[in-house]
Length: 286
Image (cartoon, rainbow, N blue to C red; front, side, top):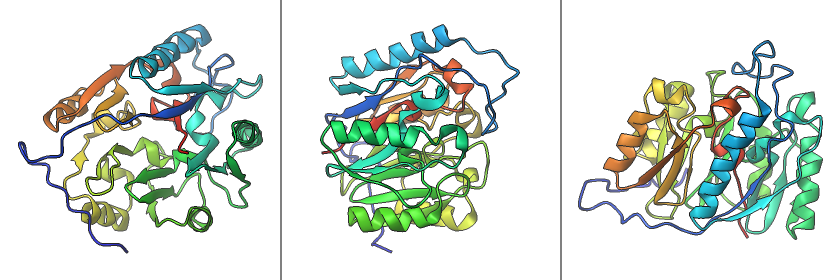
């Protein structure tokens, strides 16, 4: 284990929050619906509104554009209603795209579709041998990668990613099925090496994983169950601006207290499929 990351989050001495440029991949929810159940959020008996999902997604897209992000789009494919959750399509770092290999049969065709896009965009695509769901379970923090397991990504994929990336990969075990991907339980607020800062929900993890998070990120923001239940942690930050679920009001308060600029958006329709801001956002790192 690497040395403990010590950050000072006291007012007046905390790092100055400065936005960094972001390049992201998104997918319009043109075929969004809930027709199967592969997580606790999904209920095929509950009606969904594709047009509303598109409207809400467009607000997120336009928010990113307004922040100056480079926003790329992958074409949605009929029959793949969860393709809107682009974060699960792979993990991209240093120009290398580690592809996704989905757990559930309903989503497995998404893996090759995203890898095709990565190739066409000029990334070095690494076809996975192990089951993983991309940036849903892999989060870059500083020079290392936090990696989730327990429901979707197999821990062997953590070893595979460590070999491919040459970076330390730290395994965290998820235990609450409502938080089945790491990006539903951890938000990377500042990934700058030396001033790493995150937010997380302790009850989403086993005891050993909570210990790892406490040791590495002693100044982390602890989010309450209410905000986590609207996927408030499923957010996207550029180090200053943090796009979050609009209903995560206490998280918004905490972010402001720590010098961030929270921006709330309503993705309530996409929440019916178990996804939020981060789920719709795959970061492209050259």
